[in-house]
Length: 335
Image (cartoon, rainbow, N blue to C red; front, side):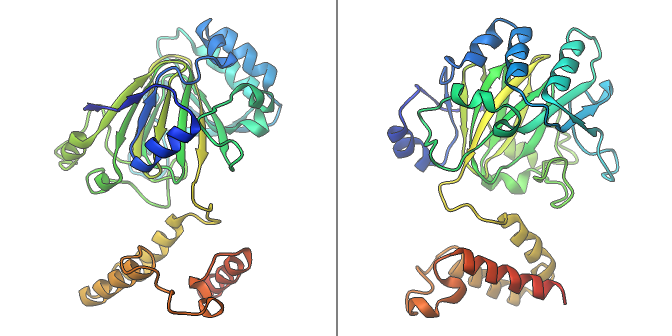
């Protein structure tokens, strides 16, 4: 696999001028090495745990637990009727205590807390995790990920992501969005964590069952990050994450440059699947032209010939317009 491009830490102006417009991942070595939590992690997991526990609230969240035979690969069960793990409520303090107890075990249970909202569960951390490269005045979701040697299956996120390794090494494998056809994605609406995932085990791929995955591997990019390193993942890039040590922690920052949608475009895909997929070929092609015109802008602004007041759904998006369109959809789906 090809390595992900690496850059020296940079200021926000250069990041937004040089890195974001490329739409490609980028590694920044040592970007957050000065964070107190990173320095604590370098003194050992116990020191990091103490700092996190001091900053934590007693608000519970959903954590994932799986038996040793899963080996950290949280995924579907054999027939895709469910999952190979359980979700249970836990606090930061409880999960950290369980993780420390599992360290050094030959066959540890797999434990994982993902997308733990820092403003809700560890608010004391916020002043101590600055990233000058990002516009923190913009709406940004900041999350903590903690666990032992876990493996997050290949998936995509709707937002741009800066993943900052706090403790333990992590291996990231990324695929560009156009590799969708080679990733053999599982169910769209029934997923382990909300986003569709690839069904292929990236480390031991079954190329008889998933032959096109070989082409995806040719396009894959990979990087191994140490504590203090950060990885920029553009929106909709597929990524697989492996925690390489028996205690790991990561903080990520999610944001969107565009106005954040109130509903994910994945909802539009659901609706398109059930209304369009089985149409005759000539009708499908007509709808392809429709989407290219109105959504993807192949022919410029589709409403430029209309007065602003007459543009309706094609006009400037306002809360009132969104509410009106949502009602139209609810009424249509309720019939």
